[in-house]
Image (cartoon, rainbow, N blue to C red; front, side):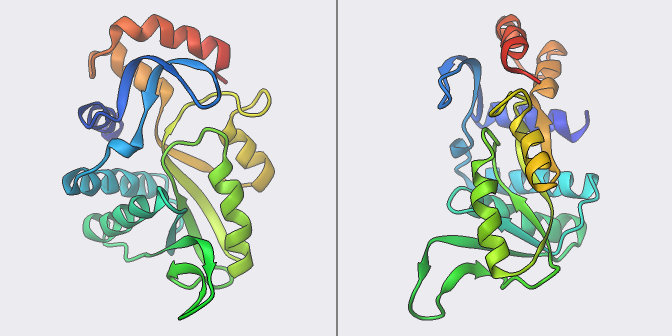
Length: 216
């Protein structure tokens, strides 16, 4: 699994991936929880950005600009764009949106790179649950320019049913034609537990049962 195993260990060490009994926003009862808000130091963001960059390069995603949806996506995009430059020599641009359009000064919806028609944009976010961030971002991006969204990169694909019988990731592909790439999947995490890469074997049975009910 290479950098995938390293990332799973990094999530556990950072307190981002935890095991127990959790009630998710969806109301589902899950035996694991992913809280990307627990990345809170410079060293963690530095390392996190390298994993995003690795995923972009590994999947050969064409990129000119990284877009981080406000607010959580902003530090993620910044960490990823600096890692692309530092580790892979890819000097991409980045931008993020405002929650409200600024009506004074330079004005506008976006901060950072001003988007242009045909620009290859990769959206950076943490965990996709319903696809809400992308669904809100697409109209904003397209109102700025007719950009080419070449992909979206998230940390973990939960591989769970979305609105229907397919996952939120699959719904995004169906509705927008956009591929969503994840650094790891829940299947990778289960495999890492099984192979003693990270602790959590006492929750394996519950995780597998949870996958049977909600997984795709």
